[in-house]
Image (spheres, rainbow, N blue to C red):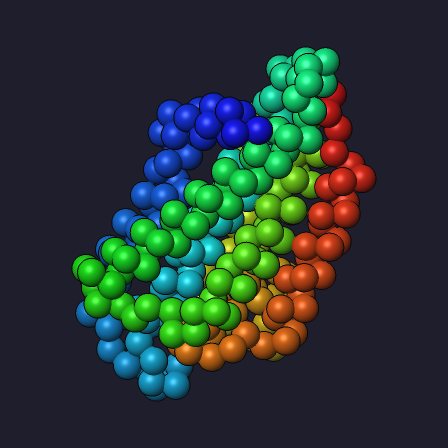
Length: 244
C-alpha cells in the first residue's frame, strides 16, 4: 500500500494539469481578485464583513476541491479501467480496492495542500483572516471533501472512457459552482435558487466554510446535507463502480 501510494503520488505530480488547476489556479485567482480594492472594504450587505476574509477564500477552496473531485479523480480511475490496469491488478496480491483507497487518499492530501496554500498565501499577501473556528473548519473540510469525492466516484462509475469522464464532471461541476455562490453570493439569490443551493452539497459546503472562516459553527442543516450526500453518493459509488 505504501509503495502504491508513493508511485501514484509521483504520477499525479508529474501531471502538470492537475497541479495547475487544483493547486496553483485557486491561489492565483485569490490573489488577483483579492487585490481589487472593493474586496477589502467592509460590506454592509454581508454584515460588515470583507469579502476577502470569508466569501473569496471559501469559494477558492471550493473551486480547488471541485476540480479534484469532478475532473481529476474520475479521469484517472476511468482511464485505469479503460486501459485494463484495474483488471490486471486483480490478478496480483494488490487488490483493486487498494488502488481506489490510494486515489481517495491522494486527492484528500492534495485538497489539504490546496487549502493550506490558500490560507497561507492569502494571509501573507492580502492580510486575509485565518479560519476563526478551526475545529468546525476541519470538520466541514473533511465532510464536504468526502461528499464531493463520493460524487466523483459515481461519475467514474458511469463514464465509459477516460475522455468522457472530465466532460461529465465539468458539466456537473459548473452548475454546482453557480448554486454555491461562485459568481454571486447566496445572500442575493432568489429564495427558490437558495433553496436549491441549500440541498446541493456544494452550497452547504461553501456556506459552512464561510461560517467557520468568520468564527461561527456550521449550521446543522448544512452538516446534515453533507453527511447525507456522503452516504447517498458513497452508496451509489459502491453499487455502480466497475473494476473492468
